[in-house]
Image (cartoon, rainbow, N blue to C red; front, side):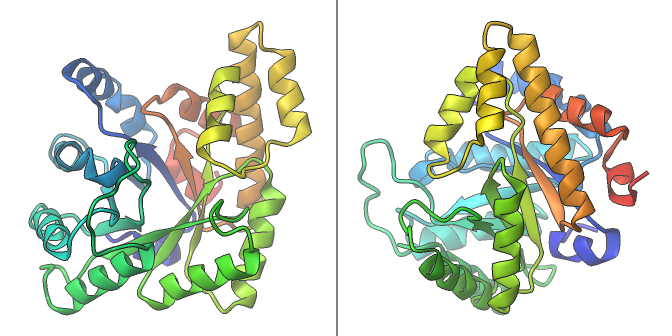
Length: 304
């Protein structure tokens, strides 16, 4: 099965990881040297990020192709609309379709570092979702169309502080053709479960996958706080990391324990899936699995 939207009802909760395209040959070698560790965990799928303004377009495509041809992993590319024309996006979709890719995570995308996204036809993620839906309906994909994933924001989007308005935006993306959503990372499960309840109240029925990132260092926690603006770091988590800051191994152990507790609690609450932001490193994800007492994602799905 290669369409992610069909996995939720047929397999139970999914387990997946996020990769980013390496910047140079040495980083490529390092990623693929460790890829077998990810394969052993047998994730439902892996996602591959796409740089601001298309800055990693070629590398994203190359990584997806290599993962499909050289590994047992099922890759889903991210695709951002910011700064792209319709012709560019259509060309990208055609290339992915030709490569046998059946899933796309449709995002607006961050602005480039110079702050100028340039001309583009997709100012918002919903514009990209509509375009992919139209591409599917036109027969542009040989297997009937891409399954479309979107981003979800349990704690709100930093550009839309009004949570009611943010829910309206999210519902509009669903109505435009989104099949499932992966949430921004969070550290307090109550925020995700409340968001899931509010989605249900809004009539949103697509699977909602929870995004988790095991903290492995105090510096990494600070960077996450900057990248995931608005994400709450609970006092107990913050204190646990800072109290152990002088011992990096204990910081990682505490971060893995926190992510493990999050994972188990979310599974107990019937989450559709868990998506781990790995930073291309398997160690923390593997330790979460070990702490949960499971060997791979198939056990994850059956709870055994």
